[in-house]
Image 1 (cartoon, rainbow, N blue to C red):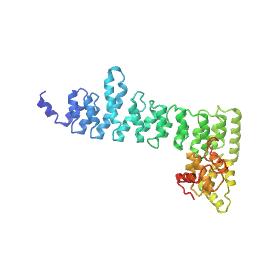
Image 2: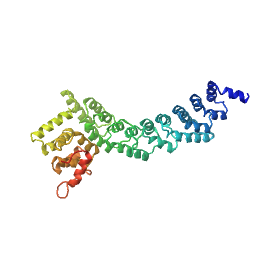
Image 3: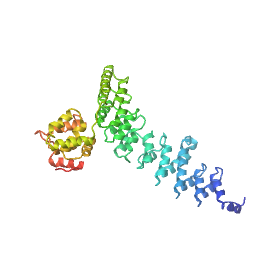
Image 4: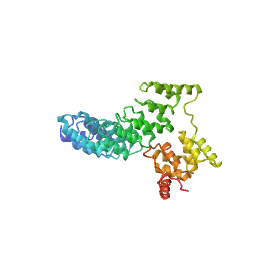
Amino acid sequence: MSTDTVARALLDLDVRVKLAANPATPSDILTFLARDTAVTVRAAVALNPSVTAAADRRLAGDGDERVRMLLARKLAKALPGLSGPTEREMRERTLGILSTLVRDEAVRIRAAIAVIVAAMPDLPRDIVLALANDAAVSVSEPVLRLSPLLSTDDLLALLHTPPHDATATAIACRSNLPPEVADAIAASADSAAIQALLANKSAAIMESTLDVLIARAENEPEWHEPLVQRPWLSDNAARALSGIVADHLLKILAERSDITPSVVAEIQQRLAKQLAKGVAPITRVSDEALMEEARYLDTMGELTEDMLLAALRAGDVRRASTLLAVAASVTLSVMDRAASLRSAKALVSLVWKAGFSIRAAGSVQAVIGQLGPDEVMAASASGGYPLTPEELGWQLDFLGCRRS
């Protein structure tokens, strides 16, 4: 075929598309077609498995997002088949172009690559970390959840500096999550991530960590079912759960085989009493009703430190929180924030603002903040507050409430 004939044929769009899509088309023609003005031709080249490195590199910078998308998918899907020694050069070329595409400005291109390569066991570290640290959830979530190449240190770093709000939840869903990472998630205030962690039966959650989560679970009803369904529960954990979960979960708890018979008998007795009463184990009062009650008591001059301590001794965390909120003239959301932060200083400052003694502050830290004995801020040597008024005021500013 003469040069003129070829030139005339290339004026036909359909001819160019067919040539661009044909794996048998000579490489120099494919490289030429990669610069075609018609997006359909360049798209066909992007899909062609026989394209040269030069053509692929050109298409990686194509001005049309659709062309780059097709190229990204082709290259990502080709990676598993490029594992042998004879394909080493082609694999390096493919990975080089993918390294460019995982930083593409178009989120859907990065996401397309992430979905395909997320579970691959032999990607370069720079590609994995680029995807895992992507600020777009659709890009990083599959990698955070599935990539076997993210180490424990990588996961802890991602939790410390998350690329987006769903980071912890995605990591919590990983198979065989190590205990160090589970601890980091459990220590957070991210309720959704903790729920995902508890529902992940392959996650290695230490017994002490599970005990802390159960202690925090009274006001987190979404955690109750995954806690009851955990693969293993200690007798103490089962006993603690039996005091907060609804009757249908109490029945499941009573049927577990990993709890000693004596504890099972206790749970069965509790269930029988609840069923006889015809009520769930916990009768929850709305926050609005509790706040209204606390305001009424405050108006009548009956909202005292002893009343707060009585609620704390009874383990009635929500009532105690509302009593302290009203006494300190803060919203319940401020109380919730201090509790979720598990900040001893913040909780002590709220008790100080309410005008109560350091004795009440210790109980508030232990019950509302769920802090252990070694974490509770004790009284000063003189028996007063361990922080200066300036420090207490700063804590209140941090919580977003007035100091007065």
